[in-house]
Length: 372
Image (cartoon, rainbow, N blue to C red; front, top):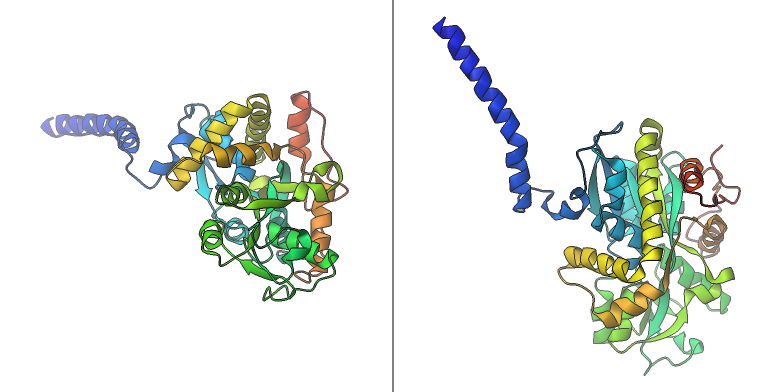
């Protein structure tokens, strides 16, 4: 009998300890302990709802304003709210290739990313690893120059102009623009009539101030940071596109995750659609929210002189603007960065259009590049 009583006491102690464990973990997390301490905003929303088919979803994004849907959706808990008890694990990236590598390597499920990395990732895997499931943003890319050295577009010849990375969306756009001027640049080295200097966006403002580059073709908020440091906007990329719209950020998903957890993907898309609606209805609040998230990423918020012009140049949209993706692929081929790709099947917009229809919004097109 004593042995039985001791066993019962041990069981009771185990139950109490197990019940207390989540409280202890929660307390530690609230104090900033643990590897996910930086993800407070993502997990602050209600997570006590019923889990979907996955207990968590790993979402990647960049700390750029062109990823406003991700920044605001995570900060405000709008995406998490749709997921209920399925927890978001956010991951921040600085370049498209590293995010594609994470997606292909199985350490990322869904990502916000530019068109060129999407194309490269799709082509390199022969269409087996990702799908574009939504648009996210258009615009927000500018050519900013030192006005003492460059006063007209023709003055770019012989100058050093930065892009974020070889083969990234801005790099492809700039190389295409150069070729349309009749100038020549080697796409691998960046040497030619214009010196294309591949520079991390975090480093570009310092390089500009030090005079090691004469300008940059970059996304926001880097473009407006350069303007605040004395630069001048020589060209807004929106002026080069019909209707002044072109895809700058997509939402992509691992095909494996899409196949195994379509309910989770649909919930994320419900969150992005509601986030974009909230951003467009509350631009000032959304701008402040994005700035708060950027501050959490970089240590301090953007000055008003940077974020105000940057924010106004970006359009958040559910429409992937698929026709412009094909055009950007053509630019990459023209620049000899990739072979002519077969993009048939790169889009799978069925879940997005289901969400849009349920919300009373118009469906969007894949421009003939959808999965069958």
